[in-house]
Image (cartoon, rainbow, N blue to C red; front, side, top):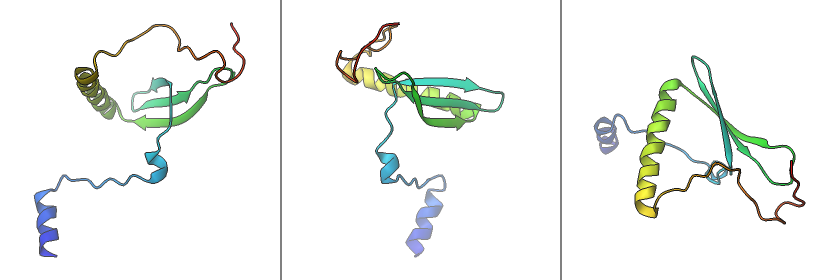
Length: 109
């Protein structure tokens, strides 16, 4: 018991994070939309599938402006590390293309 108290005193900023199996599976998203007010940022993660006329918001995250800026910094750092390991991420301006028979018929607008 004395060791447990000593550890807590040595690591006062340590946070125990629980990750349930359901959340650990993740949610696939291939589109994100961001909106903001003076007090929060709202990030909607959306799954857009070919052949389906309606995209669905799969997850919505609401964060403070300060946390939005921290997220931006963390993403920049991780993208830099990723590109150091795997090479540059290619950015295209066009919409994602899916295989012709993926998800049923393909239409044009």
